[in-house]
Amino acid sequence: MDVKTVCLGMLTDGPASGYDLKKEFQSTFAHFFAAGYGSIYPALSRLSEDGLLTCEEIPQEGKPDRKVYCITDEGRQVLRDALKNTKPCHKIRSEFLATMCFAHLMEQDDIQAVLDHRLEDIAKYQALFRSIEQDGLCDWPQGAKFVLGFGKAVARAMENYIQENRHMLVEKSATEAAVG
Amino acid sequence: MDVKTVCLGMLTDGPASGYDLKKEFQSTFAHFFAAGYGSIYPALSRLSEDGLLTCEEIPQEGKPDRKVYCITDEGRQVLRDALKNTKPCHKIRSEFLATMCFAHLMEQDDIQAVLDHRLEDIAKYQALFRSIEQDGLCDWPQGAKFVLGFGKAVARAMENYIQENRHMLVEKSATEAAVG
DNA sequence: GATGCATAATATCAGCCCGATATATAAAAT
DNA sequence: ATTTTATATATCGGGCTGATATTATGCATC
Image (cartoon, rainbow over all chains, first blue to last red; front, side):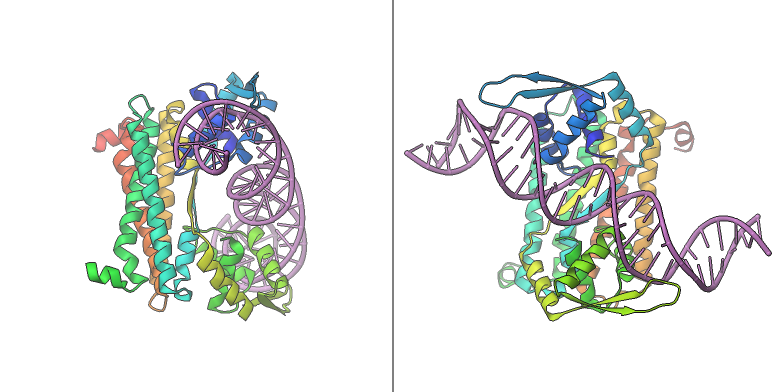
């Protein structure tokens, strides 16, 4: 499944612009399917070309025209086929883990910094999850709730693992030793 | 960090060919940094050009020459700089979760199939982890052990979450209901 | 005996994706 | 007064993925 298919899926929820979709990629989809304008705009153009979306250009002053896309019946059918026929994978690309593989070539302080940085990133995702939940998910489809819960579970597992196993890579630092 | 840098890191362990590195990408690195020949061979060519690797061509009969690469001092230095200066991210690209977001557009059987398929994939990773452990990791650097443990922890968390929450997406099937 | 698959080994290429950059304006914050 | 944030679209180089091509041996299956 590529960005095109996800855009198609998002548009089943109602018409939206590329800018709108980007916001969704940055919030509810951020933890498992990031996409930037460089993928979204070409995807929407292509889907329109292929008749899977219609596009209404709404003129605006001082800003580029807002292009609002709407899914067509053909688009819905193509989406349903895609959901049925793709073998959905789940890939991780972790520069963090790659770096840790070579920890023995690094200095203690740098390893500490990488671990701390990763914990911060996880904390940011957890904050994002909380803010999404506070926005209210009572009207969300079950699928979206399942996916959010998945993200929370994985984030918690990663956080725990790092906290409980970082001692494998670094000696207790002076400050930590004083506290602990 | 790109494929080039990871290849450089792998070659600190001793000389190897592109084919050898591919095997490592498919075993110990498989759960967090996949790479195919289409990335590996150009990476090695480029690193040689830049003087970070040397290449020895070993003629073979009936097969292409085996090109064995060896990291240079400059290569080691570039690697150390890269490990120190890149902010290591950890990205997930999940067609699985994307599909589940649109579960309400799918039929029950198809949702079941996707969930089962994902559990099988996770089981394959767990089998891979076991086989890696049986090959013996006593002489592994701590970093590699940390990374393997991370993979195991995350796999377990994903497995548990799916098993405990799949009921959110699908009614108990006839067979399941009979058993449970 | 033949067919097919796995392993060994490198290489290339279209298509897709990422991050950065460009453009233009208004409102809000500092 | 200046910087940042938000609204909006578009493009481009470089990197990566998956498929395909080539050539030969060995092993297993029919």
